[in-house]
Length: 193
Ligand SMILES: [Zn+2]
Ligand SMILES: [Zn+2]
Image 1 (cartoon, protein in one colour):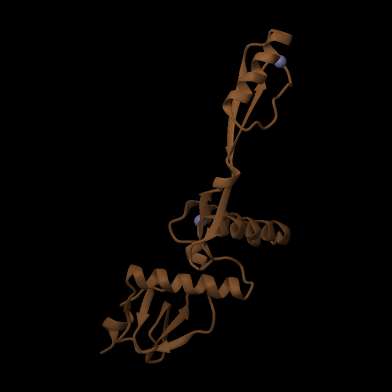
Image 2 (cartoon, helix red, strand yellow; image 1 turned 90 degrees about the vertical axis):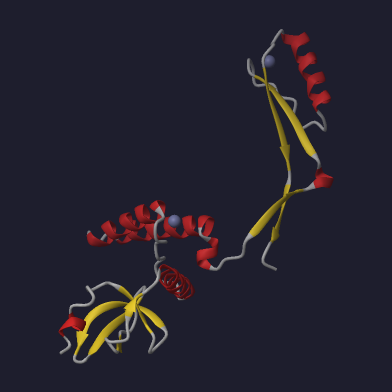
């Protein structure tokens, strides 16, 4: 009388097991038990098939977050973030390299994936967040360069000083078109501390 249970889940379904309070991937039956595997791999465990249910999106997300953290802590290969096209592309490159046993291309793809994740998925990886603020005492820098020749003003404290430089250069050369740029400095603050 367990047929309805046996046909309940497809292999690979992400399920929640209240017995262990853990989310896992359904692997199939093991005698009277359902065999589950941690997301991101690891030792399988046996769960009561009548208790497990499909995981909610929130449960899936926090489980894959935990898997990614434990992988990065243990130096394993990075796990692609669900629904991120860039992660999917890079993981695809890595899988293709692995399939043709190209170790160096596989390593390259992992490096790119890690770099991408450190930049765009800081919360997912549990990395510190930084906020950026203008460095007020440093002020801004104005700079202008001639588009007819390589001459440039170098950094000046204000717009007026760059315009003075332009007039001088125009008088000397007759050059009348300039590129203008303003730069300022930013200071980063860890927003979680
Ligand atoms: Zn991504
Ligand atoms: Zn010039």
